[in-house]
Length: 186
Image (cartoon, rainbow, N blue to C red; front, side, top):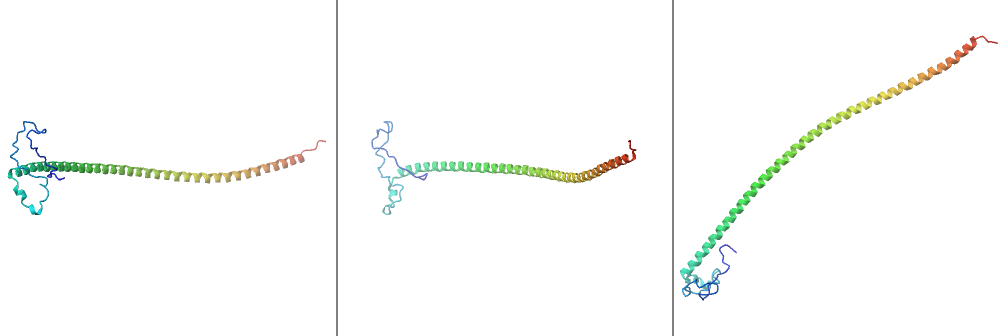
Protein backbone atom coordinates (compact mmCIF):
# COMPACT_ATOMS: atom_id res chain seq x y z
CA UNK A 1 0.00 0.00 0.00
CA UNK A 2 1.39 3.39 -0.97
CA UNK A 3 1.46 6.31 1.49
CA UNK A 4 -1.33 8.20 -0.32
CA UNK A 5 -3.64 5.20 -0.76
CA UNK A 6 -6.77 4.88 1.28
CA UNK A 7 -7.61 1.46 2.61
CA UNK A 8 -11.24 2.34 3.21
CA UNK A 9 -13.60 5.25 3.81
CA UNK A 10 -15.57 5.53 7.00
CA UNK A 11 -19.00 7.09 6.70
CA UNK A 12 -21.29 8.57 9.27
CA UNK A 13 -24.56 6.81 9.93
CA UNK A 14 -27.80 8.63 9.19
CA UNK A 15 -28.75 8.99 12.85
CA UNK A 16 -27.28 12.05 14.57
CA UNK A 17 -27.26 10.13 17.85
CA UNK A 18 -25.58 6.92 16.77
CA UNK A 19 -23.88 4.84 19.45
CA UNK A 20 -20.41 5.79 18.16
CA UNK A 21 -21.10 9.55 18.45
CA UNK A 22 -22.54 11.20 21.49
CA UNK A 23 -25.36 13.81 21.55
CA UNK A 24 -22.76 16.60 21.46
CA UNK A 25 -21.92 15.71 17.85
CA UNK A 26 -24.26 18.00 15.97
CA UNK A 27 -24.08 17.74 12.21
CA UNK A 28 -26.64 18.71 9.67
CA UNK A 29 -27.03 15.34 8.03
CA UNK A 30 -29.04 16.56 5.15
CA UNK A 31 -26.25 18.87 3.89
CA UNK A 32 -24.15 16.00 2.55
CA UNK A 33 -25.34 14.23 -0.53
CA UNK A 34 -24.94 10.48 -0.50
CA UNK A 35 -22.41 9.21 -2.97
CA UNK A 36 -20.91 5.81 -3.59
CA UNK A 37 -17.21 6.19 -2.77
CA UNK A 38 -16.30 2.53 -3.08
CA UNK A 39 -14.61 3.01 -6.47
CA UNK A 40 -13.26 6.51 -5.98
CA UNK A 41 -9.60 5.52 -6.43
CA UNK A 42 -10.21 2.89 -9.11
CA UNK A 43 -9.67 3.94 -12.73
CA UNK A 44 -12.93 5.29 -14.16
CA UNK A 45 -14.85 3.20 -16.67
CA UNK A 46 -14.68 4.54 -20.23
CA UNK A 47 -18.33 5.69 -20.31
CA UNK A 48 -18.03 7.64 -17.06
CA UNK A 49 -15.06 9.90 -17.74
CA UNK A 50 -16.70 13.02 -16.27
CA UNK A 51 -18.39 11.52 -13.21
CA UNK A 52 -15.85 13.08 -10.87
CA UNK A 53 -16.92 16.54 -11.97
CA UNK A 54 -20.41 15.77 -10.69
CA UNK A 55 -19.14 15.69 -7.10
CA UNK A 56 -19.77 18.86 -5.17
CA UNK A 57 -16.67 20.97 -4.78
CA UNK A 58 -16.87 21.04 -1.01
CA UNK A 59 -16.69 17.28 -0.59
CA UNK A 60 -14.04 17.05 -3.30
CA UNK A 61 -11.91 19.64 -1.50
CA UNK A 62 -12.57 17.88 1.79
CA UNK A 63 -11.24 14.57 0.47
CA UNK A 64 -8.38 16.10 -1.45
CA UNK A 65 -7.32 18.27 1.47
CA UNK A 66 -7.41 15.44 3.95
CA UNK A 67 -5.69 13.15 1.46
CA UNK A 68 -2.93 15.67 0.86
CA UNK A 69 -2.26 16.18 4.55
CA UNK A 70 -2.12 12.43 5.05
CA UNK A 71 0.01 12.11 1.95
CA UNK A 72 2.25 14.96 3.11
CA UNK A 73 2.56 13.38 6.53
CA UNK A 74 3.33 10.02 4.93
CA UNK A 75 5.89 11.61 2.62
CA UNK A 76 7.36 13.52 5.56
CA UNK A 77 7.52 10.31 7.58
CA UNK A 78 9.05 8.51 4.61
CA UNK A 79 11.66 11.26 4.23
CA UNK A 80 12.42 11.07 7.95
CA UNK A 81 12.83 7.31 7.69
CA UNK A 82 15.03 7.70 4.62
CA UNK A 83 17.13 10.33 6.39
CA UNK A 84 17.36 8.12 9.45
CA UNK A 85 18.36 5.12 7.34
CA UNK A 86 20.88 7.29 5.45
CA UNK A 87 22.34 8.46 8.77
CA UNK A 88 22.54 4.89 9.98
CA UNK A 89 24.11 3.84 6.68
CA UNK A 90 26.71 6.63 6.94
CA UNK A 91 27.40 5.73 10.56
CA UNK A 92 27.82 2.07 9.56
CA UNK A 93 30.15 3.09 6.74
CA UNK A 94 32.19 5.25 9.12
CA UNK A 95 32.18 2.49 11.72
CA UNK A 96 33.18 -0.10 9.09
CA UNK A 97 35.97 2.14 7.81
CA UNK A 98 37.24 2.69 11.34
CA UNK A 99 37.00 -1.03 12.05
CA UNK A 100 38.86 -1.82 8.82
CA UNK A 101 41.52 0.77 9.70
CA UNK A 102 41.93 -0.74 13.18
CA UNK A 103 42.11 -4.20 11.62
CA UNK A 104 44.78 -3.05 9.16
CA UNK A 105 46.75 -1.43 11.99
CA UNK A 106 46.44 -4.60 14.09
CA UNK A 107 47.58 -6.75 11.16
CA UNK A 108 50.48 -4.38 10.45
CA UNK A 109 51.51 -4.53 14.11
CA UNK A 110 51.30 -8.33 14.07
CA UNK A 111 53.31 -8.43 10.84
CA UNK A 112 55.97 -6.15 12.32
CA UNK A 113 56.14 -8.29 15.46
CA UNK A 114 56.42 -11.45 13.36
CA UNK A 115 59.17 -9.90 11.22
CA UNK A 116 61.06 -8.96 14.39
CA UNK A 117 60.54 -12.48 15.70
CA UNK A 118 61.78 -13.94 12.39
CA UNK A 119 64.88 -11.72 12.54
CA UNK A 120 65.51 -12.81 16.15
CA UNK A 121 65.02 -16.47 15.27
CA UNK A 122 67.32 -16.10 12.26
CA UNK A 123 70.04 -14.57 14.47
CA UNK A 124 69.55 -17.35 17.06
CA UNK A 125 69.72 -19.92 14.26
CA UNK A 126 73.02 -18.43 13.02
CA UNK A 127 74.43 -18.51 16.57
CA UNK A 128 73.34 -22.12 17.01
CA UNK A 129 74.87 -23.10 13.66
CA UNK A 130 78.15 -21.42 14.64
CA UNK A 131 78.09 -23.20 18.00
CA UNK A 132 77.30 -26.50 16.30
CA UNK A 133 80.16 -26.04 13.81
CA UNK A 134 82.55 -25.18 16.66
CA UNK A 135 81.45 -28.26 18.64
CA UNK A 136 81.83 -30.48 15.56
CA UNK A 137 85.35 -29.10 14.95
CA UNK A 138 86.24 -29.62 18.62
CA UNK A 139 84.85 -33.15 18.49
CA UNK A 140 86.90 -33.93 15.36
CA UNK A 141 89.99 -32.54 17.06
CA UNK A 142 89.36 -34.63 20.18
CA UNK A 143 88.84 -37.74 18.03
CA UNK A 144 92.13 -37.09 16.20
CA UNK A 145 93.94 -36.53 19.51
CA UNK A 146 92.42 -39.74 20.91
CA UNK A 147 93.59 -41.70 17.85
CA UNK A 148 97.08 -40.19 18.19
CA UNK A 149 97.15 -41.01 21.91
CA UNK A 150 96.05 -44.60 21.19
CA UNK A 151 98.87 -44.96 18.68
CA UNK A 152 101.34 -43.55 21.22
CA UNK A 153 99.95 -45.88 23.91
CA UNK A 154 100.30 -48.87 21.59
CA UNK A 155 103.85 -47.84 20.73
CA UNK A 156 104.73 -47.34 24.40
CA UNK A 157 103.28 -50.76 25.29
CA UNK A 158 105.42 -52.36 22.62
CA UNK A 159 108.52 -50.59 23.94
CA UNK A 160 107.63 -51.60 27.47
CA UNK A 161 107.21 -55.21 26.39
CA UNK A 162 110.62 -55.04 24.67
CA UNK A 163 112.20 -53.54 27.76
CA UNK A 164 110.58 -56.13 30.00
CA UNK A 165 111.62 -58.85 27.56
CA UNK A 166 115.14 -57.50 27.50
CA UNK A 167 115.16 -57.25 31.27
CA UNK A 168 114.09 -60.83 31.62
CA UNK A 169 116.76 -61.82 29.13
CA UNK A 170 119.17 -59.55 30.86
CA UNK A 171 118.30 -61.01 34.25
CA UNK A 172 118.64 -64.50 32.87
CA UNK A 173 121.97 -63.61 31.23
CA UNK A 174 123.13 -61.81 34.31
CA UNK A 175 122.21 -64.72 36.53
CA UNK A 176 123.95 -67.07 34.15
CA UNK A 177 126.99 -64.88 34.15
CA UNK A 178 126.86 -64.66 37.91
CA UNK A 179 126.60 -68.38 38.16
CA UNK A 180 129.51 -68.79 35.85
CA UNK A 181 131.63 -66.31 37.72
CA UNK A 182 131.01 -67.66 41.19
CA UNK A 183 133.37 -70.39 42.38
CA UNK A 184 131.76 -73.55 43.35
CA UNK A 185 131.62 -74.22 46.98
CA UNK A 186 132.14 -77.73 47.22
